[in-house]
Image (cartoon, rainbow, N blue to C red):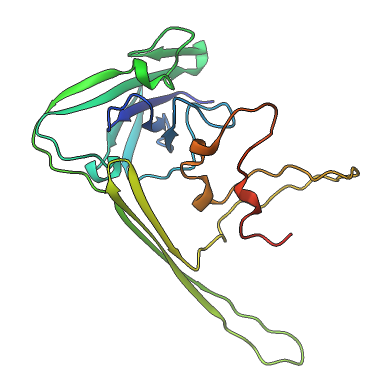
Length: 232
C-alpha cells in the first residue's frame, strides 16, 4: 500500500454510510462506499464496487507531495438544503512509517470506517440538490473470418443509466450490459465434489454489494450474485 490520502463524506449525515475518495502520490484514484460502517471484503477501508465521477491531481515536491481533489456535488447525491451538514473525515497513510493519521475517529478500535465517529462539515449554503445522473453508452465491433465461410462483422451496443431518485435511492437501468471489461477469473484445480468459491467481479453487481454482506462466518454468504446471468 502506497502513501495515500482519503476523504470520507457522509452526504446524508445518517452516520451509517459514506463515500470515500482516495488518491496517492502518483495521482492514482480509488473510490468506494462504506455501508453500515463495514469496509471492503478484502479488508480495505471501503467497498470499491462504486465508481464515482471526480478528478484529482497529485504532485511530488522536495518536501513531500500534494494533491488537489475536485468532487462534483452530483456525485454525492444529497438533498437540497440551505444549511448543509455532512459527516467528514480525513485519513493520511505514510508508508515509510507505517503510520495512519485520522482527523476524527482516530482511536485504534475505530478507523475511517467508523462513520458514526466522523466530524461534521458546516457552513455550505444554498448549493441546491445534488442528483446523480450518469449515462454510460458503449459500442463493440468485431471482425470474424473463418476458412470456407463468409466474413462477419457483428456489432453490439448497450447503455447503463444511473439516476438518483432521492438521497438514499438510486435507479440503475441497463440495456445489453457490457461485461467485457470484467477481470478474468482464475479458476484453481478442484478435485473435490464441492464447488469452488469465485468472487463477484462484475461492476453492475459490485456496487452497494455491502448491503447484502452479512458476516456469518468464513466465506458463507446469504446472497451470492455470481449465480445471476452466468452459464455454468
